[in-house]
Image (tube, rainbow, N blue to C red; front, top):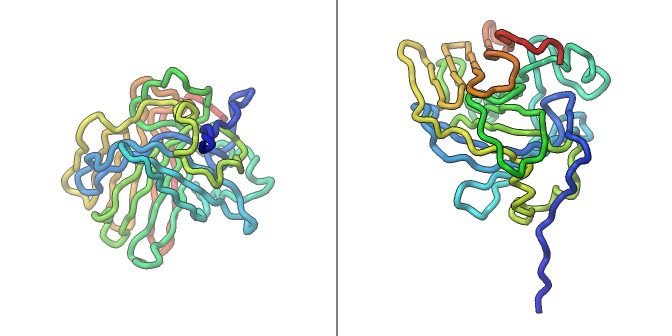
Length: 279
């Protein structure tokens, strides 16, 4: 008889993980795809695992595994991330990571020019906290107090428009381990204990709150049903994350603005009604 291999289940941490930053470690949650033209959900929530670690070249690498609804096949991606910036702060491996100004950053931009289409930029924003209404917790969820929102899109600075052929991807994620788990590297999500995956994801899916909304008059004015708004014009993109019902973010909104004025790219972050002080 063939030997049955039980699903792999990592050990639950003795204390809740408390990462200093919103980058690095093991994260789990949901990813929802939104149409870049209408703002409507184009693909339902997929469960996601992301592992981030520094490589030998002092660059952050991420391995992401997605399982789409109704699918048993994993979609895995390994990538070296662009340098994370927030205003004048640049995230670099070393002692500067623990300086108060770095620890208190509430949103990072990880952006790069598309090598195949240099008129387009691939943009990622990583925010402290969850956008929109807070999803209901799952009954078996591990305690993972550190949460983040990730947003990915493709933007054309010359026109001020999102690339219509590329979706806007949004993640709700929780950090379930500060240190990357090497034993997970070679494993498919389908080989993990589903109860474990549910425990680290921890929330119901988001993004089912209705259609998106497109404004008039600007090159880009897109409101997603998860508490995000993208406003673009030539040389400028503003991304606003708003706190919703039952939010625990400690702020009303975060505005991450990218500007390509003068041929260079700059980022600026404003936190509205911040009630948390230094974190």
